[in-house]
Image (spheres, rainbow, N blue to C red):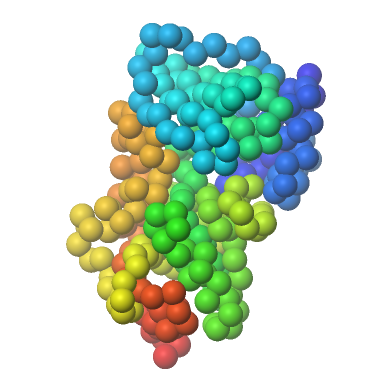
Amino acid sequence: MKQATYHIGGMYLSMRGGDTLERLHSLVGMSPFRVSSCEADEYVCLDEEVVVPSDALVLSRFDFQDEEGDCTFCRRGDDYYFAIEGKNEQVSLHHRKDSHLVSCSSTGKASFLRYMMWMSYSLLAMPTLASPIHSSVLVHRGEAVLFLGDSGIGKSTHTRLWGEHIEDVHLLNDDSPIVLARPYHIEVYGSPWSGKTACFHQRCFPIRAIVRLSQAKENKMERLTKRMLAFGALHPSLPPSLAQDEYYGDKIVAMVNRLVEKVPVYHLSCLPNVDAALLCHSVIYPENE
């Protein structure tokens, strides 16, 4: 069995397998995160035989967005299973609660493999209050600003406007960066998962602000000082399937609570124009005005 180590979101993952491991190496975005062999924190074993029990409790079902397929996340006792079923192929994984191992069956589809690695990482990282978060994140003067919102709301457009009209701005990740909510510091990492934008940076930055976007007929920005509103702005952007489970749901709640304690959270209702980006910048960085 072949082995390789990846450093993703502050965690060292030892990947083990045969042909599927070789396919993993070839995926766009993985190479910046591959490191020389070292002691791993967690393990993912590929090309394993994984059978989802018929009596497992289904926690979540949803469509696979990259191509036609159905996703199922389920649990039986302390065992968690996730499967993607396409027209001609199914891939599954298994993870036991509090273990450091995910077992994953083989797959020839790059899109399936990429998402299985995302789910594997999420299952292993969430107990440490680290997780992918659905956002577009830019870096300005050594600090990160995260933009949250539903798919198609304009996150990528807004970060692009910052980059075009504000100095010292670069994109860290455009879909699924990794947030670490440590007791004394909050950080965001680039990741191998960046949606349709090829932006894969093995870098880490402190978070200056988190902004929830919504579309409107005029530009308006406010800080969400009420804890309940700030919590509601962040929670939907953490892995929604895991939130359906009591154990992982509690971890997500703990993580969001820590984020709203440590990081300013804003709501920006806006048009997709430069004025929205300049307004957002002026509120988050008032010392520059």
